[in-house]
Image (spheres, rainbow, N blue to C red):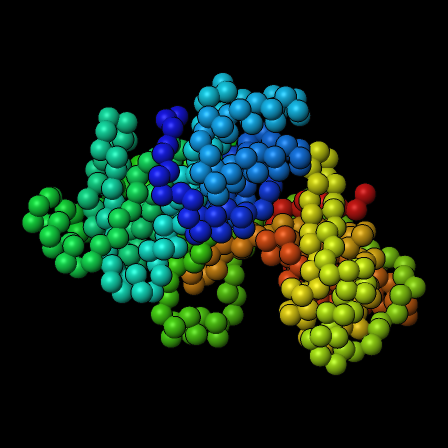
Length: 410
């Protein structure tokens, strides 16, 4: 893979994007559905927590500080030696894939954020597909050079670059006058082409995906849209928010697929509900008391990998209503020994933005043949919400037991 130059990096949008990624282990790059890569940092074959975390830190230096691939390779060698990692491929190829792919995507996603700023769109509503115009450009990508379409043309959903590993194509934003001047000088295509599709079978899931010709497997989504969401008119967003089922789950496996019990078991507890908080400040004080400080990280070992979740009193307190506050006393018991943890990748049905949420499930025996079922939900590794429900029907929360089962009570 050729080295890529990033003269405009670092810039804040690319840094913000890369920092929001969640470190997730994977045996292969296709373990996660296309859009999930917008939120997850994965390196095929890197399943140890510390190994993956160290690789992430080194790539972040490239995005944030502009370090070169040569520097990355030096540190890569040290990491490999430290963990005894037997990776596939030769050193230069593998480091190129890891470093250049992440840098290219961070740059493209950062540019998407800049170009979809409302003020920028008002002045420059047209996008132009551009290649590097050399002998390493893919033939199909070369055919897309100088396609000029409005930013909201559906063609960009499947063709916003990069479109494959090693793709160096970019998008240039233009004003209406820019487009007219360009037409006077060059051959410009202003209608979306129909290049056909091909079918690809995901070797991990077995699912058959229809992909536009010229787009690599796993790249058939708009990276910027998945990271930030596409721009919407305020009226359209309000109409969407009033509807139901606003998030589509990208992973539909459930407890049955993993051979888990249909009924969530109940754990004995001597804890009883606390007081109802009078305001947000009191809710945050209760959280700080039960977790022993402003913030606490909970760890869940799963083989070579350890998942983590952060409880921050300020963040969680803002999302909780007062009627939930009496049950905060159960938080340590539930988080220190959960029954299951599910990773759910969800796509916003209006904007296309993708979120990775973890749902932590626990059941408590409260006597009299009833149980209390608790679901904690995290977004980008931070707890953002939770639900506690008194239930005699212990199957009530089974619809939350969906996605990728990443931890289970032994």
